[in-house]
Picture 1: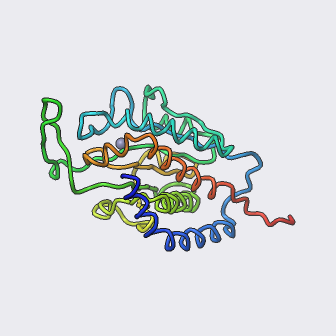
Picture 2: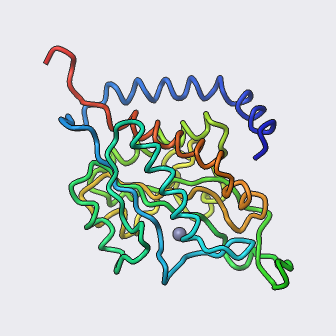
Length: 255
Ligand SMILES: [Zn+2]
């Protein structure tokens, strides 16, 4: 999105979001479900797909893995800036199986899988890109955050997902409403949906979310997702949400 467009969005949303975020922060601060963390939290950042199975293809022919890899790096930097440790999962793109992802994350406090979204084939249109035919959509765009009801720490997964979504909205990002067609809402306003059968989300002992940064089949959003300034803004919002949720100790000050 352009900077003026973003400013307008931010102006429109800021008051509502500020209230929503404050409520959520208060809720997070009083929640007792998170165990005290003695050391700074460690977050496993998983790059979705890989060099062989590279995921979706953008409207301009770029692989989803390439988008995931770049954004994971930006997010890792934003987390480290907040003194949050990062466990890099599949940054080389050579992980062998889906189950290896949560396995490599074991011992962390939180797991986030980085993805970029596509759309079902029936909604695709075709255009000439760089001399060859490529597919795109105009109807779906925006971010999405997924949690599994089968995750062993669903309350933390949900709390972190909502914190992340609220921070993204505060920064001017818009969640996709498209997911409501296939997924039950966990917190639709903040772009959080249930996706129960994702191996990376349930075959783990960690609270976990899968993040779809945006729709790379959408021609405008694809360009926005390639913008490094926007990537930094998005990573900053996510890292702030993750920090707000993981730094909760669940202990009162005098204990
Ligand atoms: Zn993906």
